[in-house]
Image (cartoon, rainbow, N blue to C red; front, side, top):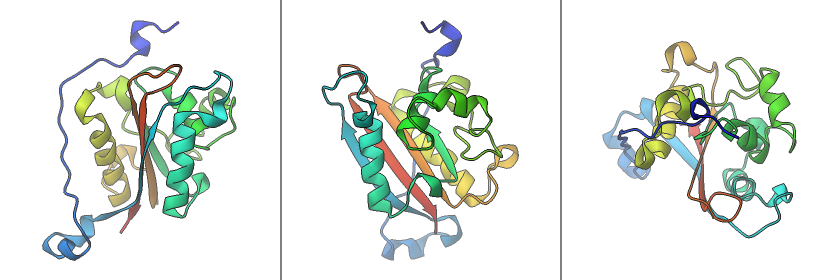
Amino acid sequence: PLTLPMCSPISDGAAAAIVCSKSALDRFARSRALKVLAAVMGTGIKRAPEDLENHITRRAALRAYQQAGIGPDDIDVAEVHDATAMGEITQSESLGFCAIGEGGHFAESGETRIGGKIPINPSGGLESKGHPIGATGLGQIYELGLQLRGEAGERQVEGARYAIAENGGGIYGIEEATCCITILAKQ
């Protein structure tokens, strides 16, 4: 059972991004440009609760890694949808950062902290900053942009080259109804 402090508060917020073609990039400061390597949407399916290989995030992440031409070991920093305390644990498994069933140990070992193998939610995640429903995903992209540009200050992940955002919403059976995986790279 989740307690109130284990759930992110619903909050107000907004986010915006400029998305353009490579040819239109000449009108902007190239030093701030990021490359979208993959953007994949997934939908929930009917599956047995123990069939975690077919979790919506896992299926979408595998497609995104294939599209991007990289794998989970290449990712330097991640922002995941942690509307509840278990979000980081389940998503670190589904994104392939650790084996299924090892997410809790992986987090406790410090591997998901800044300086660890794969820092997850250096922004603090939704539990620390709130959950502005419509702006959550783009807020994650903003944080990853700061990380890839080396502009994240005290929460900077040194040498970040590749970043992944996982954002889910709704409920379908035992999992999210929809999931978006975005992989970004320094330009």
